[in-house]
Structure formats: C-alpha cells, structure tokens
Image (cartoon, rainbow, N blue to C red; front, side, top):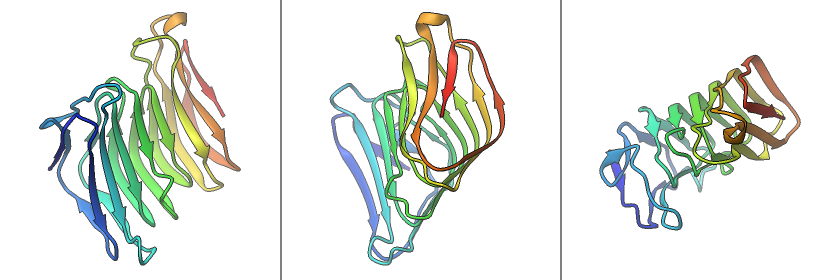
Length: 189
C-alpha cells in the first residue's frame, strides 16, 4: 500500500531499468479514495524502464482516487484493473509517457482529464455526479491509431444544468464495440 498526504506532494516510484508491480492500494491520508484540496493536490507518479525503454507497470489492485488526486505513469506498457475517478472528480490521469499500450479493465470518470495514447479500455463509465455545471471527462491528447473501448456507458445526468460528458480531442482511430447513451450526458469524438 502506498499513502500520500493531501498537501501538494508527489509520491514517486521509479525503476530505471526494470518493471514496477503495485499490489496494494493507493491512498491519500491513509484512506483509499481519499481526497486532497484545490491547489494542494496529492500526486502519484510511476516510472518504469526509463533507461531501457522496455519497462512494464502492473497495478494488481483497483484504484480509487478522490478529488484533486492525480496519477501519472510512464513506461513501455501499463496494465490496470479498475480506475475510479468518479467519486468527486477534478483528477488527471497522465499516461502520455507510455510508449506502447495502456490496458484498463474499467475506467470510471467524472470531471477527469485523461492524457493517453494507444489504449485498450474494456469499459468506460462516464458519471455526472451533479457537482457543478459542465463537468466533463476530457481525453486531452491525441489518442493515436490503436485505441479501443469495448463498452461506453453514459450515466444519466441530474438535469440539463448538471449535464456532463466525455470529449476526445483528437487522434486517428477509436474503435468502440457498444455505446449506451443517457440523457444530459454526451459523447464527443
């Protein structure tokens, strides 16, 4: 288990020549799904195989991130079980340093910024949470030409003023097998 404090600190795990395996939870203030404060985020950063350009990071436990908690991973390949940022939002998932592929079983988002290229996501669930006007999930980078989502589910928004959605900034190709639309939530690719 790794625990960080909600005071603008970054917890860095780095293996310059090999792999990283995380079996336990990521916690903030000793709580799974713990939250930080605006302007004082808690950050987790993992770097594998920086020198060899062939490292793998494996997260063998589900990850739950509270408000203002950010996760960054840089490697050749990164494998996740489930990532949940839908508990409050204002998170950044920065996987722009992954050179091959990011594999995620289930990604739950609310107001989440996602920097990712060439990925496999089994299920993407976009929540609205009714926390404020226009909170969106943004895939803010070029998603590449080898990105796939098996199932997209859009949770029903509270009402039009509390709508949400997911936006994809750009990329060459995104393959989606199934998409389930809901009112006051949108999909923009």
